[in-house]
Length: 259
Ligand code: 13P
Image 1 (cartoon, rainbow, N blue to C red):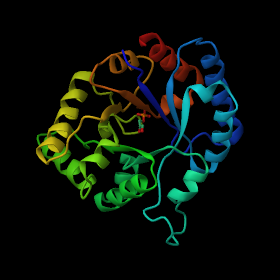
Image 2 (image 1 turned 90 degrees about the vertical axis):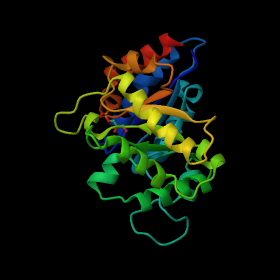
Image 3 (image 1 turned 180 degrees about the vertical axis):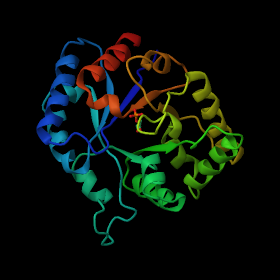
């Protein structure tokens, strides 16, 4: 089985750089025990820790197993935008991946499809690998229409080559651990949603050969094997469980075992 990607989205955690260092130390220790096996990890810390996390990744075993990611990007590379972090700054810090359109930004902060689309273009312009998040709020009768519409507005104005450079993460909001009454999706139903996204792109003239589809939403050591073992799912985005050191290492052990 090909190596699955594990994206660690720390959101606004941990509270200090010292704690971030402890998480990375634990993962480093585990990765040092893997011998020939290599993990494929992306760490997306809060902006304030990006630079230091990047340095730690380069000076440990993690250099063989991981890349640096950011959780967001400014829509514009040069315009003065208080509070935003631009693509060129992220590039200089060694960032390779950027999360685009995370549901917490879409729903809790009101980020519109138009802004998400601009951020996606900024990520591509700066040659990052965009991790594009898509997912419905509720699995109701309209969820398929919703996903189709969200897919088209998120990728609006891009050509096939640009879409092919994206990782596409299906993250249903009802499955994200911070949503009240969250429950993880199943691989079968996540794959059905991924098919809706794929078919929408295909029907609109995009070719999809290079795309890798990921799943996120309450991934833990209890269900990681089901998602990572599923052929159509190229990896997982892990939120809450990625800052619990022991739990995260259990997920990594499953990924290593499945290789
Ligand atoms: P949880 O793993 O905490 O459900 O978060 C998922 C997520 O939002 C990853 O981007």
